[in-house]
Amino acid sequence: MLLGVNIDHIAVLREARKVNDPNLLEAALFACHFCDQITIHVREDRRHTNERDLKDLIKHCKNPINLECALDNEILDLACTLKPKRVTLVPEKREELTTEGGLYLDHENLNSSIKKLKQADIEISLFIDPNLENIQKASSLKVDFIELHTGLYANLYNAIFSNILKTPYKIKELDLNSKILEQKLEEELNSINLCALKAKELGLKVAAGHGLNYKNVQKIAKIKAIDELNIGQSIIARSVFVGLKEAILEMKALINE
Ligand code: PXP
Image 1 (tube, rainbow, N blue to C red):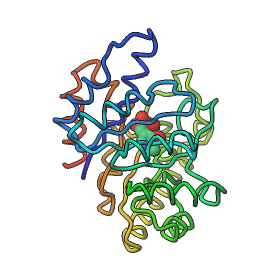
Image 2: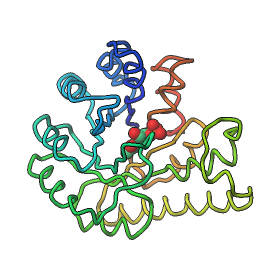
Image 3: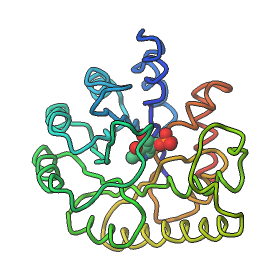
Image 4: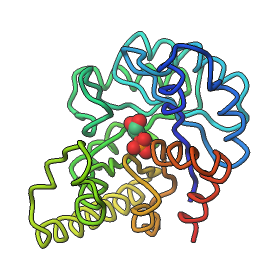
């Protein structure tokens, strides 16, 4: 299974002081030795990465660049000029901390965005919630990839197995009792599995990501129909303790065990 490392979280640290430290390109070039792809989310508000970062990564990184972006003409035009290997279309809300749900596949700008990217010969992925209706729609939109949103799975897992109750971070699943949480976790894993299988059957390549960490990743990595995982927060957080190389290699080992 391939691993894309989402490097936005390194840029978050840089932006905290508005200095070029840590240097994002240097970090990405280093990460390239140990992972299969670099993923970068250039948000409409440029809160962490920006066009300069994207340009540098595409020019210098040997690994494919997967640009996550919203249905935003300015960023899509930039993508068509700079040509990352792949664009993953994601929904975006200014007020969210991170991408909260999957893309709405009946969005009025979706067809034109796909057309634009196809004309520029860029691989297209849609970040979607794992349900079969979305898989059928993604297939009819004739994209190359889907990325299954594992956020709900990760929240459920955290609510059951972690000490998240002791943190200020509140997720709505915490209010459910443990039996229901366990049942919902199984259902969500089952949906992800079924969606991955259906997508494969329809000729789509399958990625998954969001909220995956060293504890919850293996149940997802066992799903054979998933080709690739995109992981950011947990790898960069782990790198504080063991360094970026070890953090990536530990995750690689877990997903390929
Ligand atoms: N995949 C997509 C489409 C995302 O938007 C994100 C978050 O930017 C990730 C993967 C990585 O999520 P995390 O940082 O929680 O690992």
